[in-house]
Length: 68
Image 1 (tube, rainbow, N blue to C red):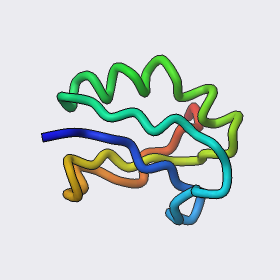
Image 2: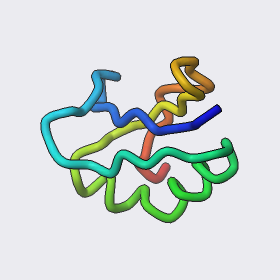
Image 3: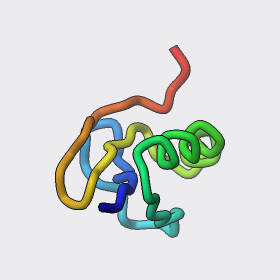
Image 4: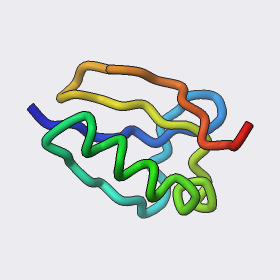
């Protein structure tokens, strides 16, 4: 199984109109660690929230990249 992030705008639509990292991870922990290191760059690139997918199954969605 592989894990990946889907990058979304503030309304939950997938951001596909710009070059963004398309990393694939062997585990959920690896994907979450990567996001912890890269969320600021994604936010600066116009990504507002993310969804974590295992293959095509959504593990969780709508996770904001904005600090609270």
